[in-house]
Length: 497
Image (cartoon, rainbow, N blue to C red; front, top):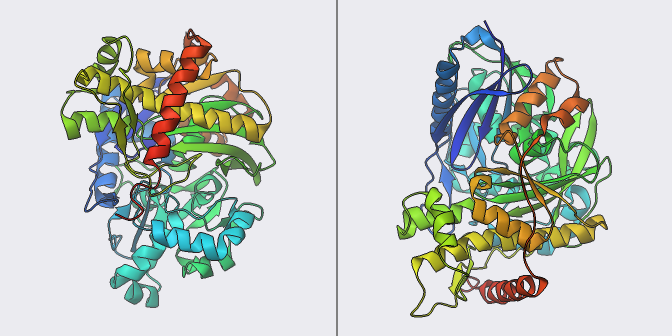
């Protein structure tokens, strides 16, 4: 029988399971949507048990497609949606509250308080500015608002983790409670220099370090799957990464200065900065790319909260498209945006603006505005945001960006990719393997299992499509001017709401 590496890519809207052969070619895919809950304005939640069940179903589908038996799995790599967090009972595995998703803004005021009182401390130790985007204030909120937490803490039964720790716990039948440095660096509790949970920061947030998972290398033996819990599979989990870092690896960006952008629910640009963290002065994040054999590689990170989620809103919220596939043809059906600009600040604005109180805004509407103009404005908004990130990253890295590798679902959108190349005025490269994130986690699993060499990650990337810029400088400048005017109007909109 053939042998496979299993890459599990748990994103905000769904779980993808991919089987890769020993040359890291994708063989079979399974996918299941995750239910998102919006209990009130500014709040976004998942049911952790739903994530676990969708992981199982997606993996089952991939294995059935490939005709793979449980013993055919060599090793498993997990990547996940990032800052989303859950707390659960160590003994029963029951969550005490829904997972609070990275987009959730309920702790925006608390994060602002922390910035005012301890902002310099957090920046010095984590290279992050306090924001509700990160995990710390989410954990703190659950501890303060869920009465069950105190009783479980007293019995040493309460544990916390991002979605990687949750999935690992379930896959190993409750035996493992671990994470990696890339994920820990997104919590606002991890000291980016020492490589450990920071006792002082945990105390500031009222979080007992004992409830946090063991943190270490991104590629290692995290524990074996429990066959009774996970589809009769007993293979080891040998890699865990934040999803964007997994995509950076899957794109082969293992050398300093290499850069990729992933287009998903949100949109995330990462640049490998080598073994030295660059502390951003232009609204970006400093993060751990991965830790291998105790050595950390760092990255600059620019994140956009709403990218593909805006297209999903056109479908589910407004009902003006029936699927994302309609977006590009509609955008191309009109010669321009008709003066319409859309700022999709559904959850505030992330890098480089960091305004949790920004509000979504569509401006420039006239009696001649059609649904095609609205769809085009939505597509363009994704590209404008990435362009702002690129400008900030060039300043922080003190080097011009001349090429960008792209992955994620939106790379199939020919209008968006061409418009993005035009706005950045650089070539875009789309990989042969569109599932770069899962490929990165599967490759890291092979490294963790001792079945691949890390430096061979460069060979993962091959170009399928290249987009070249084809826009006059005057047109680009006018469009960006209109976008920045719209952004300024959106900032602070919800501060007094």
